[in-house]
Image 1 (cartoon, protein in one colour):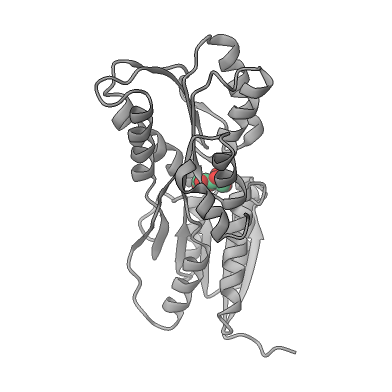
Image 2 (tube, rainbow, N blue to C red; image 1 turned 135 degrees about the vertical axis):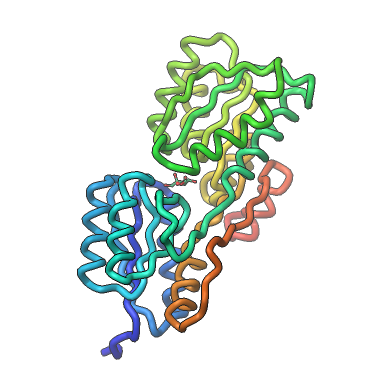
Length: 296
Ligand code: FRU
């Protein structure tokens, strides 16, 4: 039998219902193999705030040495994060934040920067700065999450400067889900004769919008569809097939999260924020990414 590991690290994942979360868990599990001193416990909040709160309570009772959490939403998970900190358990927050500054570290992508890149790209696709025209459908991620707000704000920093761009929807959320985005898009298609560009806050929703357009026989009319995440077996594949126009890489913080937890346990000081890099993925580089990942 394996000797008891020195440290117990708890990771509260908000859901495994989304492909990006599944990859995230794979990434942290792969890193755990490199960390013999760590016993990693992963819980699944099943996309419910109450379940994720209960998971964290449980990890606190187990007296994990570090709590990693990727919250379903900010407000509902803040209390239990503070509870862990009060119990002297350091907390590293991953991807979606909570409303307290008392955490040890935050690791995630720069969602404002990604939103801005998407907005800049949208303006370019629709004719260029000062000349861009088109009807835009934006499908929000979870309203209670910072990434959705940042992805919205960054995008609009560019598109709102263009008098020729019209927003067809008023802050409609697909809660990160393909099927909900499909329904939003189906209604948008029914209500609007012309849709030029779709911006989904993640790839599953962008793809859901594509499927809705296809089922309505209008996929050829929707000129551009943008997503975010860039997982090889979904976003990148859809871009390479021309179903999405572009996506932006949103690397999971799984491996880095565990490495940082180990650093902390070894007595090192952690920087307050680690920002993960992004990149634009279009037809030009999609194939190369697929090849690199053994998918071609
Ligand atoms: C998965 C996910 C990703 C998205 C991230 C934002 O749950 O919706 O698709 O990029 O969360 O927090």
